[in-house]
Length: 186
Image (cartoon, rainbow, N blue to C red; front, top):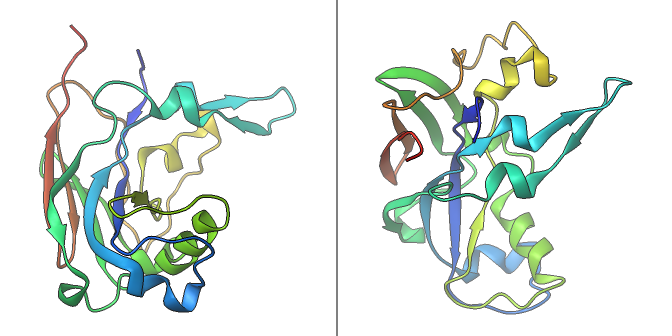
């Protein structure tokens, strides 16, 4: 299906008290808990380069396939997380540190995401919001798909895409570790 299978350790927000038009200031009061997702992505299905060098991002084909979004290992309640925007985030592949960053470097905060999604859909209790990942994925260094080398010095440097047999460990401070093994298609 893909030759460029990538990992993305992402913080998940689980809605507790739903609603519509939730302001950012009250958004975190609506959170039931937090967990981890490995947003497994087929980059060669997600990114298409145009002749002029610009990119088109096709989220559907790149992120919608069997086993693409493992979640866990459990849900941590808000009282166990000091601040969701200051959590250490790491990804290991076969024990090698590939991503080392913090949720502080996410593009949007958890509160902003809740506010945004609640403007056009009623958030129900149990809704899961994936927050995206800060830098450190293999895609960031893939020059064929618009990545750059070398990576910034303040994050771990990824060393390629995932292969069958690889063990991926997604870790977020105060939440735990989610372990997955990459399997070849049958």
